[in-house]
Image 1 (tube, rainbow, N blue to C red):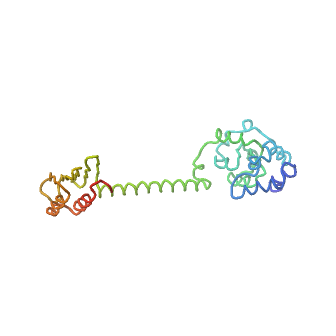
Image 2 (image 1 turned 90 degrees about the vertical axis):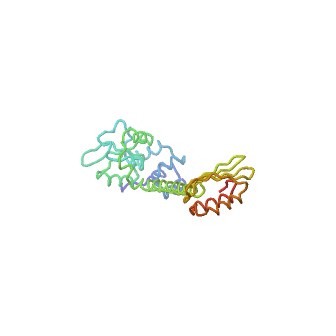
Image 3 (image 1 turned 120 degrees about the horizontal axis):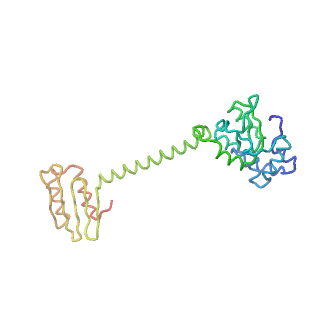
Length: 265
C-alpha cells in the first residue's frame, strides 16, 4: 500500500473535490480517528458511490457484498472495536498467510498496518459500503473481552469508574452527614400547635401556650422523667438541678433544643 496515492490526491485528480475541500476535511480530522473518506461524505463533498468508484479504479480493487464473501471461520479474528474503528470487516483467509478484508477506505494505510500487526497476516483489501460493514459488524462479529479491555476503551472505562467512585463518595459523605445530623439533632416533628424533639432517649415537646414537657431517661438517672413546665426557663432550671443525671451529649442536645423551640437546624 506504500506506493499508492493518498485518498485526497486521488479525489482531487478525479476532480471530485478541490484543494479547499480537502483542507477543510483535514482540519476536522486533526485530533480524531475519523477516516478522511467518511468526513468528506458527511461534509457533502462526495458520495459514498463516488468514493468507491475512485478507489476501485485507481487502486484496482473490486467492490463486494459482504454476504457473498464472508466466511464465518474468520468472525473472531478481529474484535468489534477494531472493525468499528477502521470501518472494516474480515472476509476470509487465503494462501500465503493473507486475510481478505472489506474496507470503506482501502487507502487508509494506518488501518491496514494496524490490522496486519494485530492479525499477523497480509491484508488483501476490497471495497464495500459503510452501511454494509456497520450492519455486518452487528450481525457477524461477536462480542469478546477484547472489546472491553483494550486501549481504545480504557480511557472511557477509567472515566466511568472514576464517575462511579465519585458518586459513591458523594453518597457516603451524604450518609455520614445525615448520620451526624441525626446523632446531633435527632428527630424533629412540627405541627401548628407544637414542636417535638426526640434524641438520646429523651423527648422534649414545646406547645403553643409556651408549655414545655420532658420525657425519657437521663444517662445516669435511676428512673424516667415525665414532667411539664409552664415556660422554658423552668425547664432550664430543672435540667441544671439534674445536670449530673445527663450525659454530656444529652446536656448539649437539651441546651440546643431549648434555644431552638421552632425546630430549625
